[in-house]
Every structure is written in structure tokens, then in C-alpha cells.
Amino acid sequence: MDKKSDKPKSTKVQTNKSRTLEKTEKPKVAVKKNSSSIVKKEIETKVDAKIELTTESVSNNKTINKEKLDSHINDNNTETNKREFIQIDLAPLEKKESRVKQLKQIDKRQKQLTSKYSKEILEGTIVTTTNYKPKVDKHVIELNGVRKSYITGDLETPVLKGIDIILDKGDFIVILGPSGSGKTTFLNIISGLDKASEGDVFVLGSNLSLLKDSHLTKFRRNNVGFIFQQYNLLTNLTAKENAEVGENLSRDKTKGLSITDIFETIGMTEQMNKYPHQMSGGQQQRVSIARALAKNPDILFADEPTGALDEEMGRKVLEILVKVNKKYKTTVIVVTHNPNIAKIANTIIHIKNGLIDEVIKNTKPADPKTIDWS
Ligand SMILES: Nc1ncnc2c1ncn2[C@@H]1O[C@H](COP(=O)(O)OP(=O)(O)OP(=O)(O)O)[C@@H](O)[C@H]1O
Ligand SMILES: [Mg+2]
Image (tube, rainbow, N blue to C red; front, top):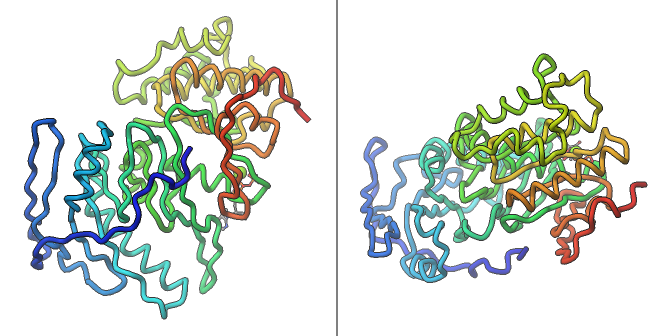
């Protein structure tokens, strides 16, 4: 975990000679491949595409800072280098405007950028609205200036108030914080269930803030798994069939894990043909883990996965999550309000009042069998 430490200092973006394009005209883009098959996109034009270039819209400079691109190539981040990269300069917000008006401006330009870039992002292009380039090899999630607010009339209710964080691939991460601090909101944003009001949310290199709803659904289906406090199993299907629902959602059937292997991992081989009503809460939660795992997601998100379970069943579920993290190298992200559970993680994020209060790296994660449960 390195909180913003490896982000480049703010640098001025070099723009090439610009010209204005008509709405229907496509920007001139030259795509070159160099010997190491790194794709460079050299944009020759400044594109404002007549998207009402007022302060409330963006100046869509599709530019690449050559220096930064070179340093990026040198930093040996293969996955990032393989992918196309677009940097967008956002016009500053009108300072005189009220915060609610500013939020509406931000929302408007986010929608414009979404309709322009969503498809490309889903296809693998990295699109950033800052000078930050995510490192896809190393980091699973990278957030930059993320805020979430709700607006009622002229009133803003800020829930997340400016979050910058980088999470490493393969970590077991626990998000801790008091009730109402913003844990679920944060989890929903990093898992693509909800949209940030402001900021870049890179998950596996895709900027989720600029994905339209149908693309977000595809992104979730292809990349992430969910476990909720209530197990949400289909009652008329057996444990095995419930897991197969997850498998069927997989984009790539060869990528999925074997259902038999998963049931062995979760210690439920005997229960594979049972229906939900024939199983305990803990067993049902383990089936929901099986369902989430069947498509072999890169990230497994769990919001209070032990919230409805007693101590014995809760421990068992945590043991399985730890095992999944080790065996399949799945990044596991668990929200809980129980500080004891945080001891099993190697990264602990404390959220307080909509902000990241503290990030702790734990070099000796505890075995779920040994933690207190009070
Ligand atoms: N749709 C909404 N409209 C307005 N406010 C909301 C909405 N959703 C959440 N909030 C507010 O955002 C804040 C954070 O909520 P969130 O659910 O993220 O908290 P939490 O840390 O997960 O809490 P808990 O531990 O109780 O689950 C709360 O004050 C909540 O009232
Ligand atoms: Mg919550």
C-alpha cells in the first residue's frame, strides 16, 4: 500500500498545435507500435468537439505528454504499457458558483466524457482526468480525488469527501469504520455498483467513473464477485446450481474455477446437492462465496459477510476468504465494523466521516481461528 507516494508530481501537460473540430469530426489519432509493442497514441489535435466549451464542460485535450509516456515505458509496467492511454485536461470549475451548481457541472461533464470514452475504456484504454497513470501490473484499485455527495434541492450531503488511495493486487484488505462513516458507499464505488460524484476510480486500469451503466454491468460481470450480508441465494436451486449461476456469468468459461474444487475449498462437498433451506446461515454464506468464485474474479468484495452469522460460522467464512486469497490469488476486500476481523488482513483501511483516516499495513495477519469475537 502506498498512499499516493508514487504518483507523479503535478506537471504541465504539453499540448500539440491545436485546432477545433466539428462535432461529427473524429480527432486525428496516430497509433504507432514500437519494437516492444507498446502502443502510443499521438494526438495531433486539441479536441473540444463543440461540447459547449464553457467552464462547465471539459476541454477534451486528447494529449499525451511524451516525457511522461517515456518515463512510463521505462517504469516497466507491462500491462499499463500495453494499453492505450488518454489523458484529459479538465477545465477548472467556476469558483464563484455554489457547491451544488459545481456538482451539477461536474456531473454534466462526467456524462459527456462517459458517452465519449465508455466503450474504449471497456475495451482496455486507460483514460485519466489527472496526470496520474495507473499501474495495472501492481495495483488493483487506484482512486484519485474521489468524492460522493447526494443533492437534495440546494443542499449537498457529502458522504465521501476526497479519497486518494492505491491498493495492491493480491492483498487481503479490510475496511473498518463506524456506522455511517461511508464504508458501504466506498465499497460500492470501488466495485462498480455505484458511481463517484467526482474523481477517477481505476479498477484493474478501467476508469469506472467514465463507464456507462451497461458497461459497468459488463465490467462487474467479467471482473468482480460479491458477497453480501444476506446470502441472496436462489431458493429453488441447489448449492451446486447456485454456484453454476456464477460460473455461467463468466466471460471466459476456461477462466472459471472448477465447481468441485471450489466446494472442496469451502468444505462443502457433502452439501453440494442441498437446497438453501436445508443449510445453516454459515453454509449458505459459503455457497454465496462459491457462486462469487465460480467465474474466478480478480477481486472479491464482501460487505459485512459475517454480519448475520454466529461466531463459529463467522470464523469459518473468514477462514475460507483467507484460503481463497492465498489459493487463487484473488484480491479480497471486506467491509466490517468489527476491529477484531481487521487482524486477519494485510491492509487495513480506517474510514472516518467520509475520509480515509489511516491505512495500516499488517505484516503478520492473524489466523481467523485465533481472533477474539466479541
Ligand atoms: N442514497 C443516499 N442518500 C443520502 N444519503 C445517503 C444515501 N446512501 C447513504 N447515505 C448516507 O451516507 C452515509 C454513509 O453511508 P454508508 O452506508 O456508506 O455507511 P457505512 O459506513 O456502510 O455504515 P454501516 O456500518 O451502518 O453499514 C450515511 O450517513 C448515510 O446516511
Ligand atoms: Mg455499510
